[in-house]
Figure 1 (tube, rainbow, N blue to C red):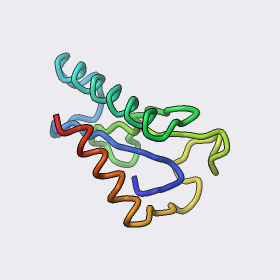
Figure 2: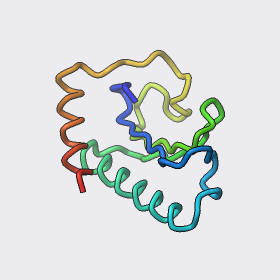
Figure 3: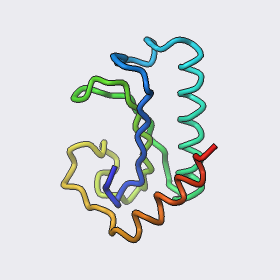
Amino acid sequence: MNDSRYPWLILVPRRPAISEIHHLPTTDQQSLFTEIIKVAEFLEEEFKPAKINIGAIGNIVPQLHVHIVSREFNDPAWPDPVWGHSPQVPYQKREARKIIKKIIINFAE
């Protein structure tokens, strides 16, 4: 998500018409959880957050997707959810490119 206040990645399994984790075959569930952990570890290492929030809410977009959000005790939405809190504060292009490069390097495997 392009909100510089909350380092945030979204995973979307490439499985059409799946809206729930428990609808995935067991092997896909295991792959998804492995990927969630890898993203959480990346965010923790890169941003040193106070807390990592993981959610598969999907009330507006039904396609299964998982949010992994870095949170700080002093972020603008704390302790509430980040959704709908306030307008996004987009990354500066230079900062976004830097983070995207790190993501590509970390997840190129």
